[in-house]
Image (cartoon, rainbow, N blue to C red; front, side, top):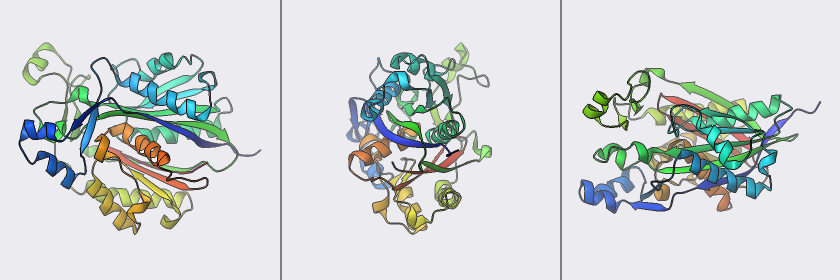
Amino acid sequence: MIPRSAQIVSSGRYVPARRVDNAFFDDRFGDGTGDWLIRNVGIGARHWMAPDECTSDMAAAAARQALHRAGISVEQIDLIVLATDTPDQLSPATSARVQALLGAPQAGTFDVNCACAAWVTALDLASRIIATDPDVNTAVVIGAYAMSRFLNPGDKRTATLFADGAGAVVLVAGDGPGFLAGVREAEGRYWDALGIFDGGSRQPSTVDAVSAAGPPHVAFARRLPATFNLERWPAMVRRVAKKASLSLDDVDLYLFTQLNLRTIEAVMEDLGQPMQKTHWIMDKWGYTGSACVPMALDDAIEKGRLSPGDRVLFCASGGGVSLAAAVVQWT
């Protein structure tokens, strides 16, 4: 029997209409804020969703574009996997509403929450399901981020970084190379460093809690080592490349979590790879968390960065701290 492999056949994205330039934060936090963001993290603008939009709306829009580009109908979808840590509600899973919005009642669904590492983890999971389950031939893997809903507008550290958006890919079962390898790691000792800590079972949003601290909001609650990603990403990249039987030079495109361009530059230098072999979007779309890697992939495809047979390596990290890396061969 020829082994099945999950192949990415198309991508899509959704960027909300409202653009917020750095000048917005110069007015709020003082002149120089925008220049600092460009100089230190590479962010020049971000997009925030409209008051009547939510995570599932953006996820469905990105999925529709990816399906259209693949020429695949919603009736062909067997699985919908949504990567997000800004769900529409705590329960049920937001992917259920995405299924309803797409009109694909035959598709199984589940959410993945590994913060900003969730989409790479979801890609890994969906690829393994396709490889092992003959009933799943087509999957849509979406990353969606609606962090503007959870911003404290007076917190300079978070309000200036986070943005909204969604990215999606369509996976199909094939008999040629596709998904090559994936690895997952975590540093749970930093679980309380960055996140939305109110609103769950540990810290419910009671009347008293909201009165005292405001509604649930994202916060840097404890300092992470400043060099965490710089220390961990190169090791993850080398580990997953080795697992895929590739050298670093064999990889044609590296895509990282889109939080800090300076970190990406330092990691590429550590790997001995030119910046021409990576791609970034935080300059125009801000930090879109669990959506940023598929959005960067879609933008790279749109700009003609990939050809059949190219190898793409994804590396992501997020609150928890969760980390994931994967390699695919482009079809």
